[in-house]
Length: 115
Length: 112
Image 1 (tube, rainbow over the protein chains, first blue to last red):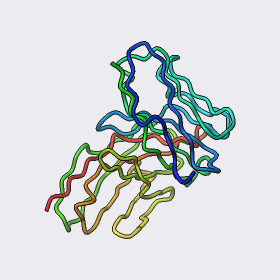
Image 2 (cartoon, each protein chain N blue to C red):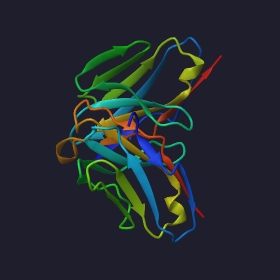
Image 3 (cartoon, chains in turn green, brown):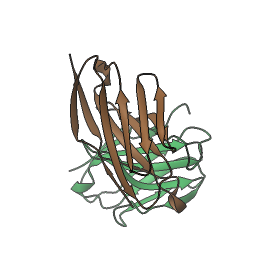
């Protein structure tokens, strides 16, 4: 697509439920990133992929968080047994290649609220 | 890992010049980015520096000193629409060379 598309834009869930957030990157972009952003803060790195391979997942807070990109395009970030502290804006970004001057283009984000 | 510091907030007057500083501490370095983020919107790319010196792009310029672990973003002829958060981000070296680590951002308010 023309831009990075994320869905849902807004998700309200009850504590303990699982949620799945989807990211559709710019067509042809090799690298895909997940960030979490609290209000008034910069994006916090979670994980990133080159093609279907997860290159770095060091930012995932705990084992309730996981991500996949099985065909090297669309990615899903899954949060199991959600907690109130998981409430945040989850942003996906993609870039044409990894590293160097390759620019990350961000999607509009998925706002998660855990009640 | 990386430690990136920038001021939390700044205020400037329409038509003026403002400089937003960013310092970073890292065991390696593979480029520095500046992003602009308007309230409620996604960050958008402004500039990239990997070598020391000044990169100019219209009203915006970005400077890098690798030996000092320092960068600044210079905004000239400020306009009201420049009110936004400005994010400094450093690209990690080595095996995670694709990743960008962001600072907390500087919220700039431009007043008439």
